[in-house]
Every structure is written in structure tokens, then in C-alpha cells.
Image 1 (cartoon, rainbow, N blue to C red):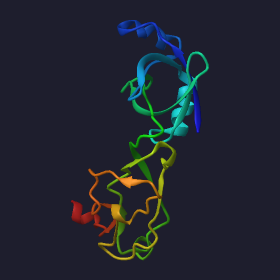
Image 2 (image 1 turned 45 degrees about the vertical axis):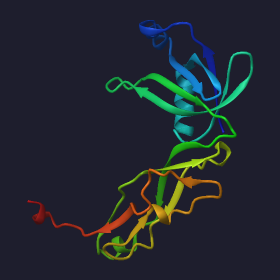
Image 3 (image 1 turned 180 degrees about the vertical axis):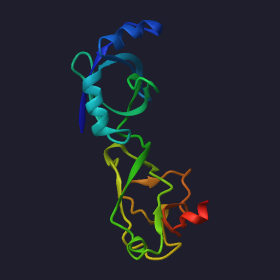
Length: 191
């Protein structure tokens, strides 16, 4: 589990610009059993933690007074042009309540259809939404696509083996393909 230190924050509103100039990121911590708190993060430390944890891994944060909380990243705002962190939302989890999270899909292997020149793979989804207790939260789902042999072959959401205690979110359609083989188009067909 990644670790991150947080610091108390007094500045609010437009005054937070001074924090960013000091390589600090304004943030907020909130949760169902946690009183919302304005905090700040060290930019370099957060960048490293974000690269490791992403949105689907638990992060242990050390709060003022030495107490520790487990959080997941709910929202990370990044400046669209200058590429720096604007604001971070940390969701403090209750270890006894299920959470909903988008878990990345990692595809491995080369489909047999591509090796045989029959077609190529399309990956319409890169995450699936699941519900589980925080301690059962998977970091990713690895999907082997080597068995896709012919045009139309697919792997659907229902084909993903979920660990015990992890269930698909009700908003997910089990028939949705996460990978499928389609016919390669010739260049002249596109002109």
C-alpha cells in the first residue's frame, strides 16, 4: 500500500495559488464517517504516489497528530495546458463498507487472429466498475487475449474472473466486449 503525508491547510479560495508556487497541492479529505478536512500535499511526493496507486489502490495517509487513514483518490484535477496538479480529493474509506471503484484492465498476449492475419483486436473498455470491501480491492484485472482466433471472437465483461468478495457494479453490462477481433481494412477501402 502506498503512503502519503498530508499537511493542514489554512488557505482557501484563490489564495491557494501561493501553495502551488511552493510545490504544494490543495486537497480535501472526506468520507461517510470522516469530517471533511482541507489539507495540502507535497507535489513531488504526490506525483510518485499517484503513479504507483492510481485511482484503484488504497493509500495510507498520515494526518496531523500521527493518526493514519486509508483513502482512495476520488478526483485529481490537472491543469490542461501547463500539466500541474490543481486539486486532489481523497476519499476516506470505512473498512466495513463496500466501495465502488473503476479497476484497470491489463491485456496480455497477442491474439491468434492477428498472428494469422485474419484481423486485429479492438479494446473498447480499459476499466470495469466493481463493488467490494476496501481490503478486497484488486489493483487490476489481467486478461489473456491469445485465444481470440477468428473474426467476431470476443471476451466480455462476464468472462472476467472476479475474486471472491468482488462483484460487478450493477451499472456494468456483462455482455459488453472488453476485447474483440475485427476485420482489417485495406488502405484503398478507406480512401
